[in-house]
Amino acid sequence: MISIAVVSGKGGTGKTTIATSLFLSLDNVQLIDADVDEPNCSLFLDIRTQHVKDAQIPIPVIDSSKCILCGECVKNCEYNALANLPNQILVFDRICHGCGVCSVVCPTEAITEKNRSLGKIFSGIKGNRRFDYGELIVGEELSTPIISTLKEQVDKKKDYVIFDSPPGSACPMVETVIDVDYVIVVAEPTPFGLSDMKVVVETLYQLNKKFGVIINKEGIGNEELENYCKENNIPILLRIPFDLKIAKSYSVGNNFLTTFPEWKEKFQQMIEEITEEVKNE
Amino acid sequence: MSDNTDIKQVTVISGKGGTGKTSLISSLAYLLQNYSILADADVDAADLYLIFSPEKSEKTDYYGTKKAVIDFDKCTKCMKCYESCRYGAIDQELNIEIVRCEGCGLCKHVCPVDAITMIERVSGNYFVSDTRIGKMIHARLVPGEESSGLLVAEVRKKALQVAKEKNKSLVLIDGSPGIGCPVISSLSGSHLAIVVSEPTISGKHDLERVLELLKQFNIPGFIVVNKSDINMEITQEIEDKFEKDFPVIAKIPHNHIFTQAMIEKKTVVEIDSEDKSVKDIQETIENIAKLILEKLKISNKNTF
Image (cartoon, rainbow over all chains, first blue to last red; front, side):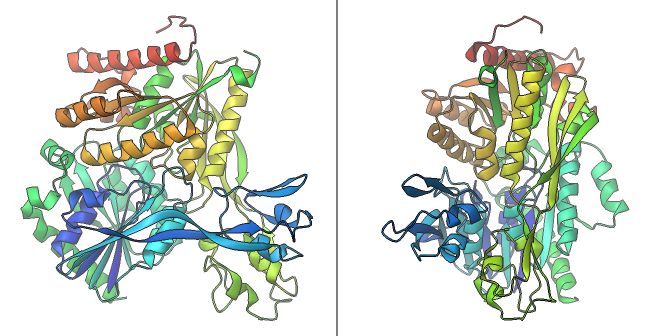
């Protein structure tokens, strides 16, 4: 099994387009949409999914008959998820990270835990393609635990597992890419695109990941992104020209490969090269 | 304008990334420069610096979550920390994988010989800088760091303080894509949200989720449909579907001027062009700026 994450610093550069196209170019493959704030892959795929489980974290429940209001839990919570009121300890559910410190420091064993759902996991299969995605419940703050739960869905019998990552380079992106074999960075050749890509590249260096860049919407801006890749010996895997026809086809939910089937071979060839690079390690 | 509570905060968000949020807010900040302080709260992909070339920055370190460090002179390799960590941040050789460490301190609490300390680390910086439109507050998160929501809160706090000092009535906040922690942090306590969307089925899907968030937080919002001519049908659907709570106040057709302005390090409204399509877009953005002042009951000094 080879796992590949599709990432981008800037949003809207074509991550979902690339991830779903890879999925439809390959056999015996799994696609995992880890952009749990705004999961969109399902809109471009004809695969029926169902809710298979919830993504949960354990949060504290305080037994007031045992609690002596000593405030140790409040003092030791790094996330300020507990507050000491005159006659009770208040738990702010939405702020709690589920780390378990409060239960450990409580001197009277007044704290137990219950599970709280932050999101939902969906899964579907069509032929030898499997698709999973996670969805953050609106109003919840923590995307990362949903991505961790989603990673339990990885099907090791597949030849390829493709992740569609959240944009940016903060914790949700790190959680998505930290265990994968290869990362594809999708970038657009504009000043914003380059600036955001540089942050992603620094993060990938820090995580010691193999990666390459797909330049999407080529021709829209300037040459600086390409020059940056060359200067830093970052491989350019593919170039997809800017074309309003692509944007229009995307707008109604057509998959890129359905509208432009001639690209399938290019994606397959790119994956072959990536596979070789990963296996040569 | 003496109290913080008089200062209105407007957050520009989008749900889906790449809809033109930063391009729009930079134009609004240019037009409203007599009224507002600009805050770049998209700390994970901060791009406003490319338009406003900030200088003479006053820099503040930002301390995010702490990280665990093991003192191996004291450690007895009892493995209690390894067994307790819920984030898989400690491996069997007792190496701490910094990017997985959430800084909760559980390992420190379970260690029987006090071998673990939690160390504060600089996870980013924020800056108050001079630009051609006045002060701008912006930040940089160390790549791969977490708790961007806390840094967003710091940026906003600083922006409010500067707005007060400079006697401004408005803080304009550039939010991040999505609906999670940094977005909630950029929205909480805002008086108005400008939601930049695009007429694609994914744009519409993401818009629905972000509007639901606004409802939960009871924040009024205006929708701007960017690249509206990519799909006029979906643009119409967006107008019809949300008109009751979140009116579409502007539709901006796809235009190369957005990328052109970015390359010239200018806002779209600063571009001198005789092209009618560009002039129309500039006028549309001016109208958005006027609507913001109207909605927040800020008297229009008629300076743009």
